[in-house]
Length: 70
Image (tube, helix red, strand yellow):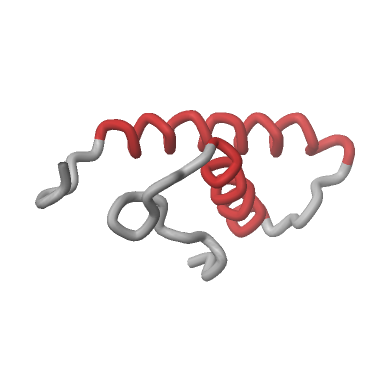
């Protein structure tokens, strides 16, 4: 898996920004697509994947309940 993707939930990270989540989504899409930057004809699909993964990642992080946290 991508070693540069950091855990974005407490207690590992307290203040997660939208930029943090988007950066992780971008790294994930780069890894699974094999493209650092897609060709022009693939850019729309690549960008759409980053946006969707960002969105569902934010939903996941907001729905998680971490035991022992307040």
